[in-house]
Image (cartoon, rainbow, N blue to C red; front, side, top):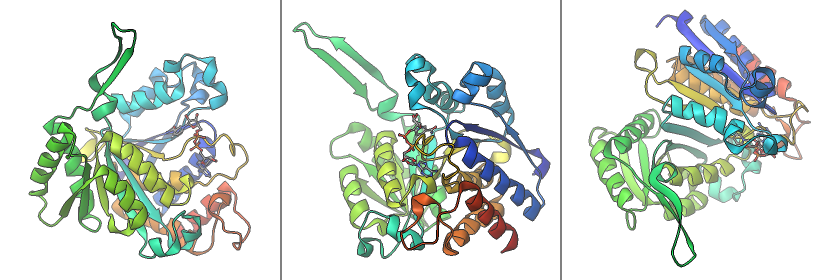
Length: 372
Ligand code: NAD
């Protein structure tokens, strides 16, 4: 692929979004320098920033920019203080983020969760439970299941009660495509997939288990285990090191990815990728964003941790642009900066050196990227 063809839409959004996006863009500029690449990075406003400047949380122009791009690097959107000022469906979380997920059929949500050994103090588990490390990837189906299945409604009953129903619906093709993502990812890791379901009580889980078992035959080098969702939630706290790739349908993945996130110590450390169909040269189009939100409590203070946004940029380089070496180098630079003692306030122990600002942390990572 010609490096000059790589187009990135950088949508910083609200709150800490612009602060951490600035550092991620700096890292991408350093990647260009180190790997002699040319990335076209076009920044555009979304969320409340979009409403204030264009009248839209996601304007038609920004949507067109995304369609022309190979990938979207997203910050975060939403400001609770302004929630009451527009109808629910116009709030940026729906009008920008959910619209992008729907438009690009972003069906595969990848959340790598890694606890760096130097940050063990930030993990809520006892030292002996994390002695073997925490390094797992949650692969969550994002466009099916309980959140979208029909019927989904509330009806009035004759006896005066109301009755509400949500439907957990999956087709074989929906299960197969997300399972293939999980097995592919496992090949680049420790080759172990835990498929999460409730096959003891749910029809959709029985089908899930059947289809995942079939897909596993195409990946004989990857070990598959099936685990009930309730047991998975417990095992994750008892022995997190036993998990490599967790394959989950939408609802179980929503709950378990947040539980896994808590193990990494701070939301500021956690990137995510949402992959869709399409994309150039057989690669996935994707939207890459920190797991956390706009953090209004610390926005504007220059103290947010930029690592989640920077690691999201690394995932973008790997999955949408095919620059695996550059992605590895960014991830190594983050690990090196942490090993060298660099800490923002959210990951700092009392005995550590004073906390770095957002830009100091970004600069430390750029320095490790260019000089190690
Ligand atoms: P949040 O993730 O913004 O913040 C939760 C806590 O984590 C806060 O204490 C915050 O300071 C901390 N935190 C998050 N990111 C951090 C970082 N990079 N460095 C240091 N600390 C960090 O969640 P919230 O407060 O529930 O939501 C705030 C707003 O963000 C809401 O409007 C919500 O809808 C929105 N939100 C957006 C997205 C998104 O755009 N994908 C995701 C979640 C929440």
